[in-house]
Each structure stands twice: as C-alpha cells, then as structure tokens.
Length: 223
Image 1: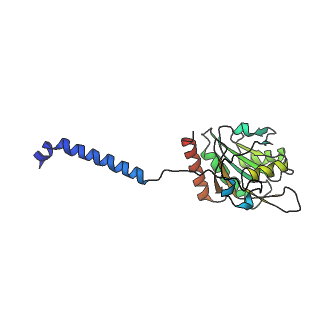
Image 2 (image 1 turned 180 degrees about the vertical axis):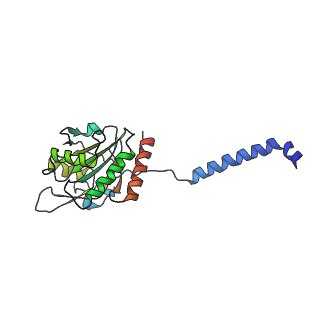
Image 3 (image 1 turned 90 degrees about the vertical axis):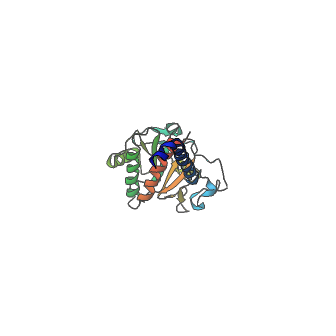
C-alpha cells in the first residue's frame, strides 16, 4: 500500500488539489453574494412618502439640505459627501420610542467609531422646541460625539419635506396643522451616492445588529 502511494503520489496529490478547488468553486457559486437593495419611493409604504414622489421607481436620492446642529453649526449635504450614514427622526422630549432609538444609535456610534467613512444624522421633528441649546444638552447627556453624529434642527417645512420626500420615513400628523410630523422607529441607511439602502427598526436589537453588519459591508464594498 505504501509503495502504491509513493508510486502514484503525484497523481493522487493532483487529484486532491483539483477536488478541493472544484468544491470551493462549487460552494462559492451556491452561496449567494450579499446585496443591499437601492430603495425608491415606490418600494415604501405610501403613508411614509409624500404624494409628489410616490410614483418614483428609480434614481431616487437624498435632496440637498441645510440644518443647524447641536453646536450651532450649519450642516449640509457637503458634510456627508462621500459618507455612509444612518439617519433618523426624533425629538428630545419623546418618552416612547426615542430613548430606545437613541441608545441604539449610540451603539452604532460605538461600532463605527474607527470608520471615518460612517456618520450619523438625527433630525428633530419638533424644531421649534428643540433649539440649539436643547440639542446640545441632549447630546451631552446621551454621549453624542460631535465629529460623528449631528443632531439637527431647522425650518419645520424643510425637515418635513426631506423626511417624506427624501428619507421616506415619517408619517403626517394632524391634518389641521401644516407640516405636522409623526416620526417612526425607522433608521435609514444612506450610501455614498445619497441613495437609501435600507430601513431598520431602531427599537429592535436584531435590526441594529443587521444594520451594523450592512454598514460594514457597504464600507468595504461600495465604490
């Protein structure tokens, strides 16, 4: 037996290498590659989308914006140019889903701290009450890192517009109050091309885990 193996060791070795490579290639074909969809208004619950864009099926991107952050600095799309970011909508006095959402955003901040390509952006749906000093106090209490995460306030009409026309994530409030907003639990993942790549429940641990994985995948794979 030993003599046989020695005599045919080259053939046996070649066969084993060929078998290993073939199996690896076969498994690679069977294993689906990870993909993240590009989300458009037509893909989303109509309650969350402004009627003017509900028909859009492709090429949807986040519109230009200009808001004021917790330090009184004007924040625009330029500050997020070439960035992957997570956006959400909240207000500082919210006692229902906001505390959990903010805690989970802090976890995302921790998980992406060493990736300069990743940022966070939280919009107040009560901008009249969430002034710069209020946002700053909230940011300090929650452990917001200024270079990573902007909490923004601004014109209510503009926030309403970007919430429903760009991020596709906020419901309308009372019809008698113009630009009234009811924020949802959605965290919105935006890529470097300003496209929406996914929605995640900001109150659920499993969604946050998935979101962090998707952020890392985008950071490594997006051109």
